[in-house]
Image 1 (cartoon, helix red, strand yellow):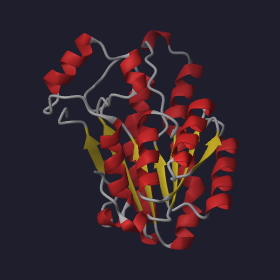
Image 2 (cartoon, one colour):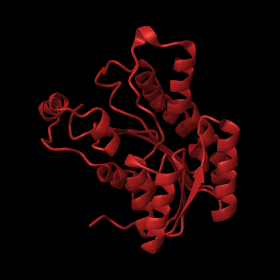
Image 3 (tube, rainbow, N blue to C red):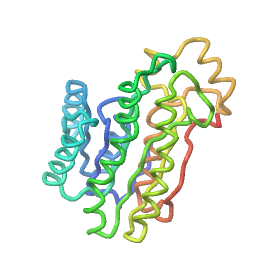
Image 4 (tube, one colour):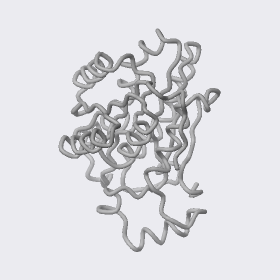
Length: 252
């Protein structure tokens, strides 16, 4: 059974990319805490299906459809969430896109798109919630990174460059806003068995590599990342900020 953190009850939580994968697991975990959960996603139908499911289970969540690379639209979604639920107290910058791309074929437009979807929107989402957190004198921002850049994964230079920059962004925000009681941390998942990963990238060969390189000889599930994210948002992690936590089964 997942841990329950009483201080999260009633807190306003915003999760980006919450309609599937790790983001969906994070939404479910915060809903189980009886937090006021909103999530942003570009995929409308799966997101609405999640809302219906949680509503029927008695843990309603709010969905804002948005392309996070459209910064004005992102700002409108954050403002709409705060108007509907109250000032945002926890932000989870989860949304990302790990499409593979050959370096020789990357155009300037493709490069900019990788930065936009994996890094730029994290900064501007944080920028949008920080004023409310400053006014409240507290808040938690959790940025999702990746171990891909740490292990030197190839075939996706724009993605790995973006994800390495998440750590720099995290530490800068933590330093700038710690005086206001705002904690900022990064979480770097390993190879988590989301439906997307299973459908697109996991093969017998890649799974053999996982089993060879992880200390834990099993698949890692989205809920395991979600549980750690919820802990970081809670007062149980009240002294944790400016840090980079790896959840990878011991790969790194």
